[in-house]
Amino acid sequence: MMTYDNPYTHMECGILVYDGFDDLDALGPFEVFSHARKQGANIDVGLYTLDEQDHVVTSHGLRIGPVEVLPENLDLVVVPGGGWSTTDQESARGEAKRGTIPDALGRLATHGTVIASVCTGGMLLAEAGLTDDRPAITHHSAIDDLRTSGADVVEARVVDDGDIVTAGGITAGIDLALHLLEREFGTDTAQSVATTMEYEPADVVVTKEL
Amino acid sequence: MMTYDNPYTHMECGILVYDGFDDLDALGPFEVFSHARKQGANIDVGLYTLDEQDHVVTSHGLRIGPVEVLPENLDLVVVPGGGWSTTDQESARGEAKRGTIPDALGRLATHGTVIASVCTGGMLLAEAGLTDDRPAITHHSAIDDLRTSGADVVEARVVDDGDIVTAGGITAGIDLALHLLEREFGTDTAQSVATTMEYEPADVVVTKEL
Figure 1 (spheres, rainbow over the protein chains, first blue to last red):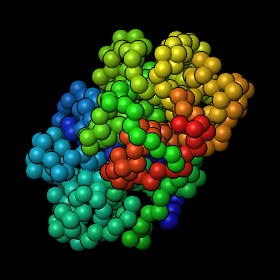
Figure 2 (cartoon, one colour; figure 1 turned 90 degrees about the vertical axis):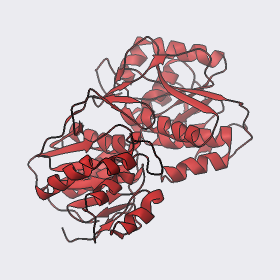
Figure 3 (tube, each protein chain N blue to C red; figure 1 turned 90 degrees about the horizontal axis):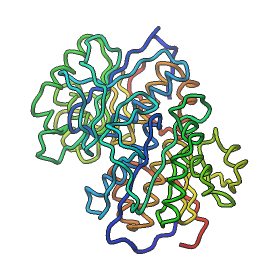
Figure 4 (cartoon, rainbow over the protein chains, first blue to last red; figure 1 turned 135 degrees about the vertical axis):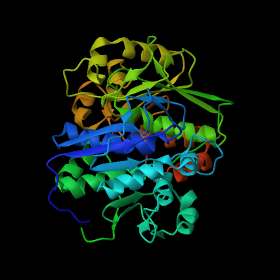
C-alpha cells in the first residue's frame, strides 16, 4: 500500500448522510476518523446533510444526530450507501433518482474535494458521472449497475483512484477510512487506530500514482 | 464452530446503551441483528437504557435514538464498552463505578437472559461478578483488569461460555453478533448476513458444550 506525507495541515472530513443510509456504512468511517482525532491526528469529522435536518433516520430505523448542512470546503466527503434493490424513496436508490446528492458531489469534485463512497454510496458517484471510465467498486448487489453506468469495475475491497476512492459493502467502509488515514496521515496513524479498533485492515487496490 | 438448531421461536435482543458508549461497539451488533431480521430471522433488536432517556450520547459525540427502558424478559442483552482509561463519568469506567448497570445485568442473568459484551462492556459483566472464574475477554486495554477481577482470560476475539459471551474490542462486536446468530439461528443465517455486510467472520472460542 502506498503512503506519503500528510499534505494537509488540517483535514476536514464529512460523512454525507440522508434518510435511509445504512448505519454502519457511515458509522464505520466516522468511528475510524473519530479515533484518529482522539489520538492526535489533525482531522475533523462530522455528519452532514444537503438540507437542514434535526437528525437523519437510518435504514435500520435509528435517529442519529447532530447533522449540519454540508459546507463547500471539505477536504473529503464520504458517501454511505443504503438500499439499492428497493423501491423505498429513503434509500441510495431514491437519492440516485432524486439527483440532488449526485449534483452536489459533482460540484464538490470540481472544487477539489476528494469524494469517497462506501457500499451503494458508489452508485451516487456513478449517477454524478464521477466514476465514468474510472476504476471503482460498490456493494456486490450493485456491481452490474456500476459497470453499466460506465465505470471500470475493479473487484477489490477498496479502490483508490486519487480523488475518487470507492469501497465495497458495509464493513469495507472501515477499510476505506483506514486507507485514507494511512494515505493522508501515514502508516503509524492508521495502524494505531486499527489496533484500538482491533481490526485487521484488508488489502486496498491503488490504481493511480499519488 | 458449533451450531445447533434454533431453540427460540422468537429472539428478543437488546443492546444496553448508556451515555459514553462506543458507537461501533453497539452499532456493529445492532446492524448484524437488523440485517438478520430483514432477511427473515425471527429476531427483534433495539437500543435500551436503564432509565428513560430521549436518546443517548456516544463516546464520539453522536446523539442516537430511539431508546426504550430495558425490559426484564429479553433473551439476549449485549453490553457495549466505551472508555476505560478515563476519568470521564460518561464511560464504561463510570458505569462500573456507578454500579447500576452491573446490578441490572446480575438480575437479568439470574432470570435466564444471555449476557454478552463487546469491548470494555465486559468490565461491566466483571463488576457484576458474572465472569468470575469463567472464560472471558475484553478490549486489550482492559485485559489486566479483567484478569484481576477473577475472570479466566482467554485471548480470543469472541469467547462463548454459554450464557455469558464476551468479545474483544470494537469491531469484534460484529463477530460476536454473527456468532450468536449462528448459534441461535444456524450457519445459513449468519453466513447470509456476513455476505450482505461483506465481512469475513473471525474464529470464535467456544468453551462450554452447548
